[in-house]
Length: 290
Image (cartoon, rainbow, N blue to C red; front, side, top):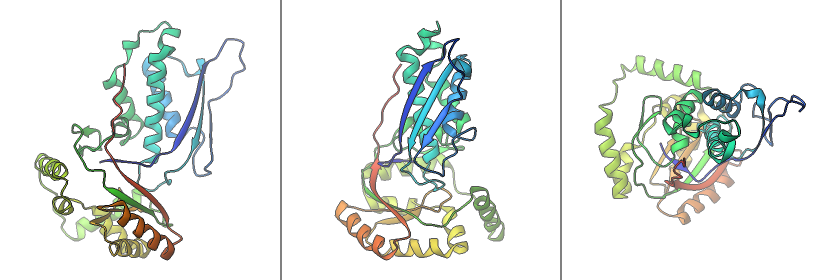
């Protein structure tokens, strides 16, 4: 898994609620109508788990979050997980900046390992979004290698109109594996060494054979729009093209920004119904403090 230079923007407001203060529910606002603003929101779920872990009753605080949504929703890009991670990082910072002492609590009540456990309970990809960088991930994504050295290759992201439900995608994948007597991949440890060496070399030729997504065959056979999108992207001088997560978003990696920008211009003109994003791989790490 790797981070890219594409993110939502969140603004937080957190204050103590006095005994005489009007009781108000936590509030969330967004410029997107696709975001749940109440109980099903991952940001609120993460905050609830954080306060449960540190022993502060939710009713003692008022939390407001405003979300400017930039990452496409339900796109296989981890936008919801990244927002939950941002919420936890904000609360972690607030905890060490005075929230703990305002309740007479020891800041050491929660450490980084506990924070990552809260992140995992919030969502499978949230621990990675806490850590960031480029990492070899196992399990449901929570078992992470140390950060890997990776070039900042230019990336073109394409989000088609097609919608893909994760449960449906996994059912289709299971069926495909049954039909084809699919055999499981080799040992993860060997794969990690190959990935590490390929990324460290900075040689696209070493990376190309490693990039694959089992869901690509599933979705391409079921949703013609995705197959057409992948075919079009492969004709624009990218050194590799694939799909993110369970889709439907696709991506291309390029050797230069010039090649990426040229692909963006031609593809966005030919397929205006697709949402296109120009970005780059980002291995930037912002270590947790405290």
